[in-house]
Image (cartoon, rainbow, N blue to C red):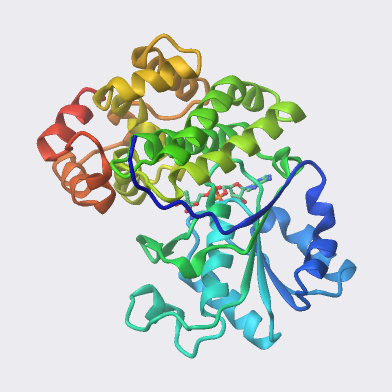
Length: 365
Ligand code: NAD
């Protein structure tokens, strides 16, 4: 165990079925009077209806797409300026939350969104409040200071305290409509957060506890949530586990499976969760050590081999791609080079250089 660590978690969390219906009350409590909502098309009608229902909601940007573009962030920030907003509410998966986080951080600034994205202008000292309403049980973005943004084909993770939400409203009922494949992708993303937070070189004891609990809950509930999306118990447990997953990697940060997910998403167009899951079972085997064996026993598994097999079985159940041959024509040299160069790779407990990555990917041929 680490003898020294710093633990902080500044987000106030409202969790439970029906919490989203209390949005008006929560905005009153926070004294927020002018809010802009950022969401995808699925929640756009509901967001428009909120504008009618709540005086504090004054505008909606309802076109956030998966792998959110900087242009959507610029438009959300423009609406916030136009309406002199005091908060941005993100409703949706990680894409909507990350859009709202970035827009809230820059709305009070003078510059263009691209200047902040390229770090050619510092973030303004003042920012709007950000309210995160996750709907996919995956990213944990509601409790992290990360915003993942795409600009054209480039996808960038920006880690900055200015992105930390003020409040998270985690209402499992909102995830009931997530389609099965997205349920599997996002559930495995949450599992990757917990495992990577746990095996990160910067892991720490409080985060470890949450990681173990998240792994236990996900292994017990993801299959049910996938097979029976209307199962409220499974959805509720998954929403809680995704929140714990977010908390467990927020400080230690993720490692090799997330590092590999970037080239896999950018060049082979795997959705984020599927891209993380692609290497997760391989990395369980590569990273197997006494600590990981302890986690396995703590969640009721025999050993790391059983954990790797469970992950592979979930991927196959969800119809996720498991082999390189399923990705089309793969440039293995470039894939290994790009994965090795990603900064998160340095967090992996086992050194993953290009040769080691090649060995891992060749076993997935
Ligand atoms: P997403 O936000 O891209 O959503 C996936 C799809 O599901 C979209 O089409 C969306 O409209 C739809 N959807 C969302 N909620 C729904 C619901 N309740 N019912 C029906 N459809 C619904 O997917 P995601 O996996 O949640 O987020 C992925 C993004 O988050 C990626 O860009 C990833 O890099 C990023 N991410 C961010 C963090 C962070 O800490 N900021 C962490 C992990 C991942």
